[in-house]
Image 1 (cartoon, rainbow, N blue to C red):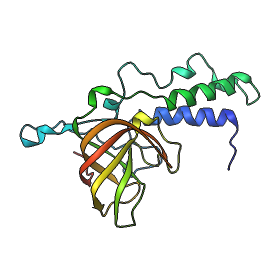
Image 2: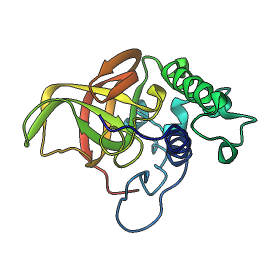
Image 3: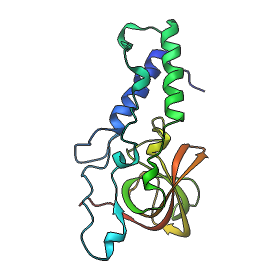
Image 4: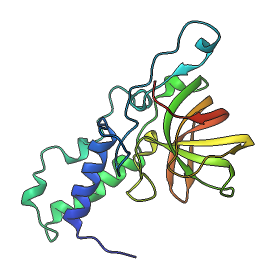
Length: 199
């Protein structure tokens, strides 16, 4: 297992949180980038039964993901400083216990995100994580569990691979699940998965 100096790891995790809450720019997705365009609101008609969400909607309004780092000047701490170790432990605890937005429990939703396959072959899958930014859970640490959706499909989803940008639709439940790639606070009973092409 690769050991990263403590201060670099703390800075890396804090930057990951900031990236997860930021907007992406550019033509191609790069490590840490979110879906480029804000999802449109659902148009009136039959689709209104599906509520279109952004990743910020999954966060409780009063939760501050960086509260554990308040008052710390990370640039002035080195790895031997006990405050650095405590900050890392506090941040990990805050991430692991990230609360869900319980108002979303049981709602039929659609949300854009990136796929992290949990099973299946190269052409179909039944379970995957949906994450807010490119590379999450694979190339960079996972976001807090309240920014990860564990998607479960009754019928295999075809022609979708890890890190594909998709729209996922279905019924969202507040249920924690732990996977090899990270914990998720939400489970989505998948009704459809389609390629994300912006608005």
